[in-house]
Length: 84
Image 1 (tube, rainbow, N blue to C red):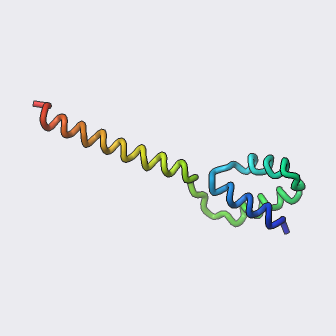
Image 2 (image 1 turned 90 degrees about the horizontal axis):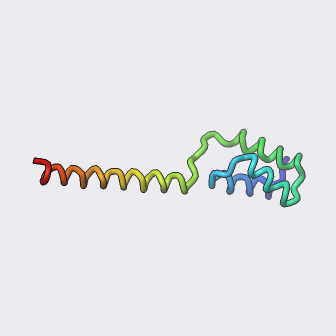
């Protein structure tokens, strides 16, 4: 069974959108053995049913959508009053 510390690190960083290869390199630099890291990554992949988008991507998409809707609304107002 993989080290619980490794699994916790992988779970936390995967939520933030880090790629498995990036996590592996980080953990190896922290001194964890390659076998433990590979085992933990394998277990993480098996238990991860759904991949959520990172929080910063969700915020960016939400802000972009709101900005787009505001621009469309303002354009509509402009056309309503000055488009004749």
